[in-house]
Amino acid sequence: MNWGSAGEFFAMGGYALYVWSAYAVCLAAMLAEPALARAHRRRALRDARRPGAPQESFE
Image (cartoon, rainbow, N blue to C red; front, top):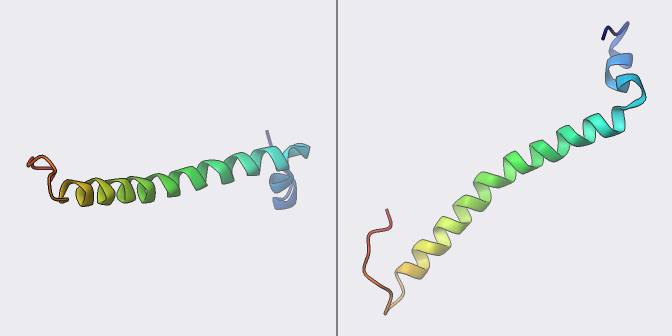
């Protein structure tokens, strides 16, 4: 598909809302995943350090 201008490219042939929102959702998921994984790891390590927790190496 060829676009005559940058405006036509960003309009995506009338489907810009769907195309750019899909990119935004994908980007949000890609940014959230490492942050959520880091929080989960910290929580798991904190819970493992609790008194009475099994003594295993989590690192």
